[in-house]
Amino acid sequence: MSEVSKIHPSAIIEPGAEIGAGVEIGPYAVIGPHVRIGAGTKIGSHTVVEGHTTLGNDNRIGHFASIGGDPQDMKYRRPQHNTGIYDDPCRHGPGYGADPNRRR
Image (cartoon, rainbow, N blue to C red):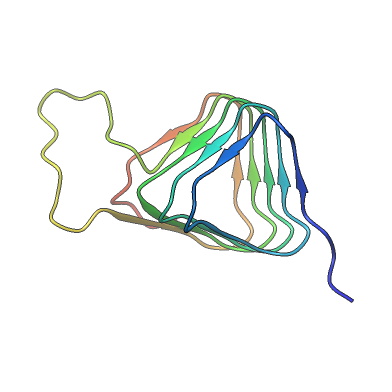
């Protein structure tokens, strides 16, 4: 029997997002349509995961984190393919921001 995911009622999960077994998504989190989240991952409140981002199994993403979006660097030029892959397990603290083109 697979473990049931716990998604807070205020979280927004876009159609197309893939959520693994036993995932916990906190209040006001936003998960984009091209995001894949591995089993056992925990995502804190007010976190945004967007772009073509894959989170592996058993990741921990702190609240107010932003993963997969464009950085706040005015010189940044979006590549043709915007993909972030975070292997399992990774730990990212509160307020974490990630460049979508880096592999973890």
